[in-house]
Image 1 (spheres, rainbow, N blue to C red):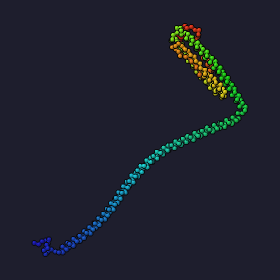
Image 2 (tube, rainbow, N blue to C red):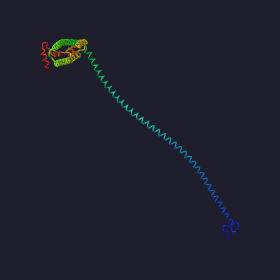
Image 3 (tube, helix red, strand yellow):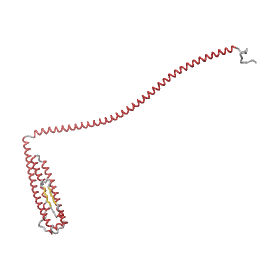
Image 4 (tube, one colour):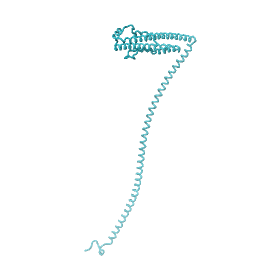
Length: 313
């Protein structure tokens, strides 16, 4: 039986088949070689493109980082700008309020100046009118009449001062008499203590003296007030220095007239005093209402009568 694959020793195996197969293999090899070369060239071009893309990618990354840095810097700048804008707005608001206040003050000052200018103009007009009237009024005859009128007023004021001086002298005499009567009352009280007057009755008597003393002080204060009113009236109606010096002289004399009546009792009541002080007392005519008999104790009364009077209180 013959071998289908053929052998070197087989006489039936055709050589042209082998040649044809070789030729086909060479053609396939060439075709594959061309395809390989094409793919290789294309791979090379893709590698070149990849390198270019990677280079662009690296550049893009660098640009992106730089852009991020730029954005961050821009954000910081924007934040600083916003803060500065806020501060400027606050300063602007404060300055606006200050400007408004200054404008209001300027308006008030201008208004006040206008009012003062009007007042000054009115006063200037009045002064001009007064000067014009004074020039027409103060002639020699009018000045002479004015001097005579003030001279008469000065004489009347001096007469009133002399009258008040006389009233002051009368009141001083009355207080001197009151001092003598108080001294007599003190002596009589010391004598009557030798009888049957108890310390309680003596306290009643001292209380009576104190009440009388308080009444006299009230009357003196009322009189002092009336005198001060009278003095103010005289000063308002009087502008001459001579008249004021006369009035001041009598005021000084009244200040120096302090009349004190002391009543000394037994040892347990020593130091008890009745004081009637007239401070600035130039007395008006109504002071005559003070009755010195309030302070009088009858020296002719007996001890029993004294005791009965004290018990009646």
